Length: 109
Image (cartoon, rainbow, N blue to C red; front, side):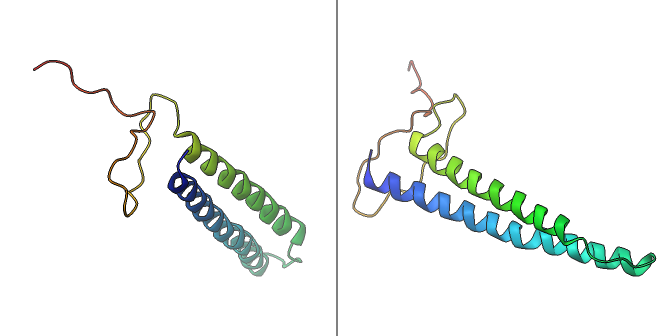
């Protein structure tokens, strides 16, 4: 396995974990904000911080699992029949190996 493929897989995993981190921050904030708004409209009770915490934990676990899945997907090049995007050619590399899911070359004239 080439070095740049491992780097690309690492980059994909980091992008995924950062996106998941963003969701982990935004989702609980929305839940807390919704509870404050709901309490302002109704009789007004305390914010359920347990629900906010649970939302954050679920989002964080999901983000971590997705990062691992993104890394493994990129390393394995998705052996399914669905084509996988190939990363841009790194500087200094003149030829790249076709992905495992590359379409077959046309046959005939």
